[in-house]
Amino acid sequence: MARWAEGAVVAVLVLAGAGPVAAQLPASRALFDLPAGLAEVSGAAYGKNGVLYVHEDSGSRAVVTGLDPTTGKILGRHDLGVDARDWEDIAEGPDGLYVADIGDNSSKRDRGLLVRVLPDPTTAKAPPTRSVRLTYEDGPRDAETLLVHPRTGQVLVVTKFAALVFAAPQPFGPGVMTRVGQLRVGFTGTAGGPERAGPAAQVLVTGGDVSPDGRRVVVRTYTDAYVYEVPGDDLVAALATTPTVLALPPTEQGEAITWTPDGKALVTTGEGEGTPVYETPAPPVRAPATLSPSSTALSPPAAAAPDRSLLLAGGAAVVALLAGVLVAVRTRRTG
Image 1 (spheres, helix red, strand yellow):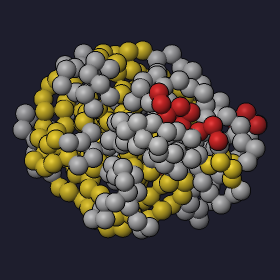
Image 2 (cartoon, rainbow, N blue to C red):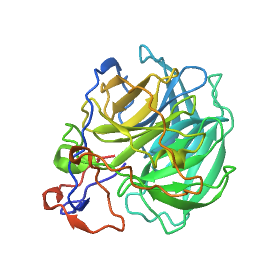
Image 3 (cartoon, rainbow, N blue to C red):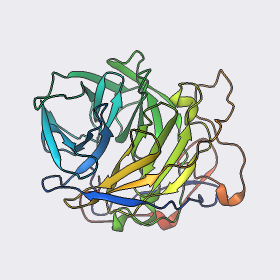
């Protein structure tokens, strides 16, 4: 959950001379509508059992809800036995579901974040979970995106503003997350997102997922999906390549995204009871870009035509404030 405070200003830094991102427009289809009782879905992931698991944002007990992936019927609810402070994403890892309590609207969570690992539920009662506490190397930040490699267990967190990428200790466990780079996201013109946020909705990172075979990774904004190919098993290296950008079906509060079990499509939804759950075909697989073996940080993609230039949110380059993206809105939920 995030709130836009009255009079708050969102300033987006733009790489000088950058143009818009050209987003592809795939033919999405609605699978079903979110059932009653699910008003703040902010994360989704398929379990190894084929069930579509979702979770809500915050303000209640930490509950993971299993849905029939074709009808949306609720198959079960699994209470993890803890409070949900600000749950923002969920992913299927090598040892179960990873649920990320990583939201931090005011960037003041000095005790760090929590990732709870839930073995894939096989009964109506949720099995015991383990909790992993993480901190950022440079102080608290707000994030809504958790990426987990399904085989290696590599864990990355991407911040909502500026799209900074942090790597958790590996093997995965408690400790300090190291900053490994910064994603490039751009203005696409795709409709959707919180209405009062305007174009800023196109550059705020709200979710992500790794494909079940570990070959591809997707990171979304309120409006678009950025699909990367994974060289080897390295998610950091994947995020250093040039992505394919897909326009997602418009939703007011789109945060959840996951791959279908066969890795051929993306499933997305937004907040609000009755919000459609969409399936969007994934782009064709491309050969991963060749990276230096010593590369440990996200580097700019190869030079591209002007209409494929990407926005760099921050960075060392000379930047200019985009005056058209100063957002002042009343206090409200915007995920």
